[in-house]
Length: 341
Image (cartoon, rainbow, N blue to C red; front, side, top):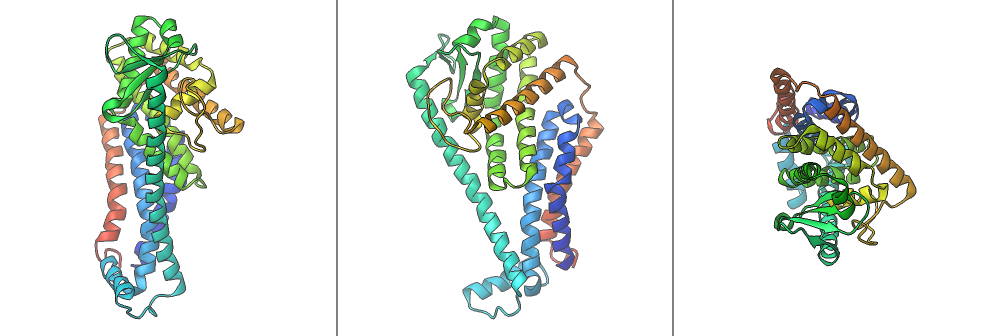
């Protein structure tokens, strides 16, 4: 298992640093946001598997010829007090690090989910008190606010799209339909689950710059995916104008809308429904979110104004094949006994 651990370590380093940086600078994801989304998810999964697997395989190397034999030997040491002299200090350290990292990632994923669910529950309670449903009986609620804001609040059967009075008065009927199609696409395609996963990844490994790159990329890609759904029934001009009007809202209102979808990255804070619960934790964070939002809006408008041809089927297939390989390689190295010796 000697070469297996080092190969997994090299793959983990590549997926944690140069690969995400190159992908974040690439231009093609705007031409194929769904394919790019799959690639980002694959990088996260394969990177985590390789990182944990490298430490696990290295730690088990003296205990057996392959991963299964090593696990059995270590289980015997733990459960039946078998001799542990075969394991050196660094092997025990690697096994401990692998276990701690696995628990840390899973715990952060669960903690982020519970925190977001709690915040969304509070948000929904405030909406029930301060917002009013639309007359058409759809899952849309209107809040009394002058800023043009629109967002969706996931909640299973209780999912709603929230609009402000300011937005409804600023938009024409076709533009309002484009906004509703866009927000409903977020709900129907379960984009909040992607936001949750990548928010948890960033919180679990905040020292890794590529977790921020991945989260920013996913935020932008889901907006493009929702735009594509809106374009199936509404005109490009209507959608562009709606994007521009929503982008003109004060940054605090837009940050609140982002909060409602995925929860804050830094601090949990409940202030008022204006139009949502929670604001950025500090001026520096608010400026960073404003910059991210401006970049996302600019990329969306540029994509709509200057559309490019979708990726060729051959290129799309090559990217999907790469995704399969990225997941298959670390998995095979871990489960196939003696693959590299």
